[in-house]
Length: 307
Image (cartoon, rainbow, N blue to C red; front, side, top):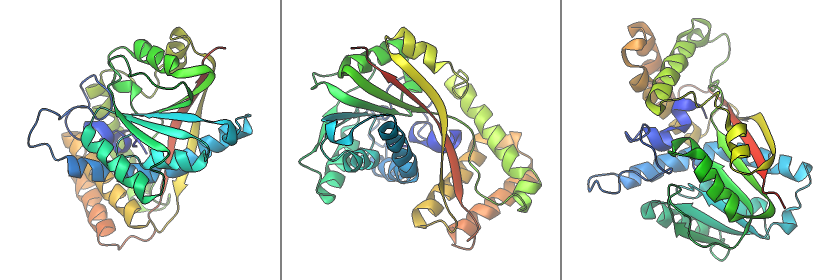
């Protein structure tokens, strides 16, 4: 869970050429013997690290809203990827057993390794499962966490119904989805002041929405949650940030974000913009841009199973 902005966060799925396909999170590529699972897992771990401030903010909001961390006995992280957020949830909710679900066994191996490294192996379990099919039998969950996965399924209401069934009565679903683009440079930087950054973001976002086939950013998720049987739906944008100077992980994220954006934008971006942005990515990669930061936003929906 992986898991930034449209062409950054959806790198979890789309950078491998299957963002246009329906299916759960990190599913595709299973049948390709040449698929580079190590590279995918490495990239997802960077995405997960960048999302950690968001996870902390969302859990803090749940606690402020009445959630007692000591009373959360079971958490299910669906589309968990290599488990960065899985382990963070275990840290925030110290009494909880956490079940990490993903359809890629290669990524679940990373979850187990990470959990062991954080002395969480007794509380973190993994299970191979695909959201397009009925989930395996699980102990009822107090909290289901679904980040950047529901927009990939063919029938969201059906999938959300499966997540509803995984919750105990009164349990909470947290669903994290796309919001706006990230900021990474001061307003007076030439890339921002001259508009190149905005043109990159707009072109890459347009490419993403074309591939997904619907306006995922403006989608009416509350209606689908309600149709699936959830109540008490909330829908808000949560911001999170990594201050300048970015650490090595932040630099890796930013370089990939820019280069992936350039790839997605293609000829929609003026050549001068592309050259300037590639030069920026090269400078970040060399550790020469100490002014770069990351301020992102995510749409966070919460909903409860009645009972």
